[in-house]
Image 1 (spheres, rainbow, N blue to C red):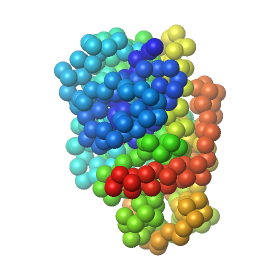
Image 2 (tube, rainbow, N blue to C red):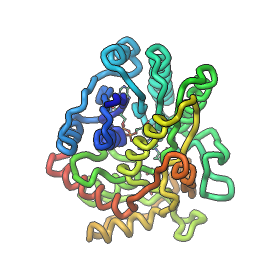
Image 3 (spheres, helix red, strand yellow):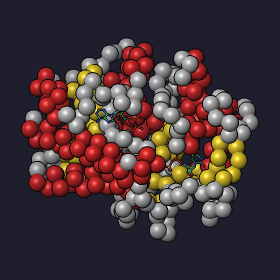
Image 4 (cartoon, rainbow, N blue to C red):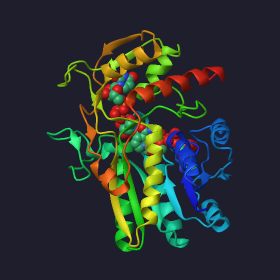
Length: 341
Ligand code: NAD
Ligand code: WQD
């Protein structure tokens, strides 16, 4: 059974990926220092899979500590999730973001070279495309722009660091997955997102408002040049996103030569903020308290994925719908209530 090191494996996307790796016969080894996650999630992984993945509570920027993991285990590949991800916070504390996201990545790359590990899957983001010029459906070859936040920029710089490391070490097999907007939770209700503090992302704010944690949702902007005046995103179910990582590892297993490539991981469909609210109200059978507010600075107006390359090369496509994701996110929010979260 191949060992896959999953940095940030106790986090939102990491935990769902750990489950899918186990379901597909891989042995995930988690490295996470729980700065943005909770041991509750490990219990959830165990309930779903009946397996308790080996977990190291380590800061990935601490190279000496990380080396122990490689000495103790033969690692086939790394899926690197561990990073900070709050856009607004990154504007306030850019160095905190550049340090964790870039030192974390370079430490992982150094260990790959030191311990002769070839395979890396990196969590990138559609933020590297910025506001698409003209067509809103972006391919992997669409123009990349410097993202407006330090968080987004750390993802663009990370992609460049990986490319340069590959250029100097052509035996490496490195893949950047550019996620669109991950939402939802595991349908079992055992794992999901645990946003610390007030969430910035739309769906956690919707479910938290509906359950009474916030008085109302503000819809940022009503006069964008879209059909209903609100922004459009490509929302992807986190379980589909998790499966994309497994497909990527399987693809790497079949590649003899080194490579560096990037793939869009999205559904190919755009949904507006108002459409999300309408869907949520229908699925939860309750009215949401919301109002229009000012535009949020830095928001992209409209973007969605062209995910053909992922289908043709990774044999991956999204199978779940936005409705499935909203249903599972709402189920998860109700589960959290039982844990007093
Ligand atoms: P998350 O915060 O839930 O998970 C990240 C995990 O990494 C957490 O468990 C945290 O404790 C851990 N971590 C962070 N820094 C660490 C360090 N130095 N050492 C050890 N552990 C550390 O975030 P997520 O939503 O699961 O995102 C995972 C990855 O996907 C991130 O790289 C993020 O930037 C990227 N991404 C996320 C989204 C999104 O909307 N959630 C979109 C695009 C890309
Ligand atoms: C979606 C839409 C908001 C909250 C961000 C990062 C990106 C990636 C995913 C992670 C927008 C609107 C939101 C609210 C609202 N991050 N909204 N009221 O902005 O596409 O992407 O998260 O790694 O890099 O930039 O996602 O969920 O914040 O917003 O009206 O309270 O919902 O304006 O149109 P976004 P989001």
